[in-house]
Length: 447
Ligand SMILES: [Zn+2]
Image (cartoon, rainbow, N blue to C red):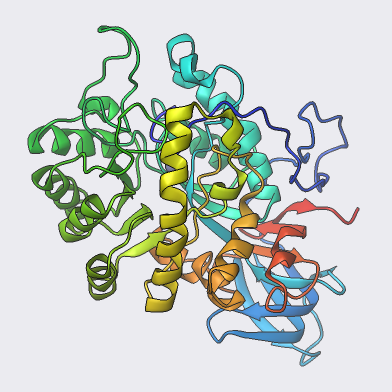
């Protein structure tokens, strides 16, 4: 599995998945432990639906609305009203006491990855087809958790592009995906498959392994050719890949510059995995759009991120969720050395007003627990509304999805109903009752 921030043999159970049932499909036994059953989304129906809920969060204004009616026509929101200003139009969906929030974004997932079984040797035994098929279940539980859009930041062989196509066809259910294809990084670096004898899993720019600016350009062009909508690069070492360092810079300055120049010329944004201070600074200077993890932020990096508008995607919950007991001693030492710094960096970034976009690194821990990041962000100093903005309006901008991110007339009807008020207790976002995706009900736990 490529370019995970962490890679550890964790035997996990899917405990956080929301139990829900299909709206449109007949009930059927679910072979996946704890996973919801949902039918493919039937898109773009011309039906008008009026959705009523006790509350809705206006993430732009930062306030809770009461007695809310959201009118949806086909895929779009056509009216947002409070109280019975007018009789409801079309079919009514009554959500009772629930609170509506915009469909959530996760800007850092690996839908085709998981750390169960012999994941270290998986890429020797399996192909990208296996990766895509593993992603089917992960896409489903991610949507059931209220995440209607995700950015998939690194996978094998364009498995994320294949998943996106299957979801768009309606063959399977899942969030809308912004695929990155392969992560781009140096030979022997965090994006590379190492630990094998020469000749095993040797990769080139097509699979994201690139040395020198020209190869980096080729790597970007190849990812875009086969369907990437964003570019993921690896600016520094990682915690559980095989380098000695946890945070040393890997892609050189001229390589980072080539990647950013090439991606931006195509109108595509760049995410940079970066733990160490020098690599973070180099990536920000090169003009990447987001720093993933950002474990060792310096004052200089924070100031530069603010002035350049670079987002931080903190992936903070994994630090609590990853099972340290399963790590090899050297890797555990790397994790233990970097986790406190990462906590401090997140607090500094929040206090300083760095733009935060929500991301989890799901795959390092079980898919479907994505909403647990909210509470960690709030604990680190964010207000609940800002945490929600990180997963909606800020993420929509980073993912280049201007058609969604708030409950606003004209936008795509991606809506999530949760129990409770997330502005009082952000963990309400872990209690997903109902999900609408592009105007179609994808999840309904109330039946
Ligand atoms: Zn990752």
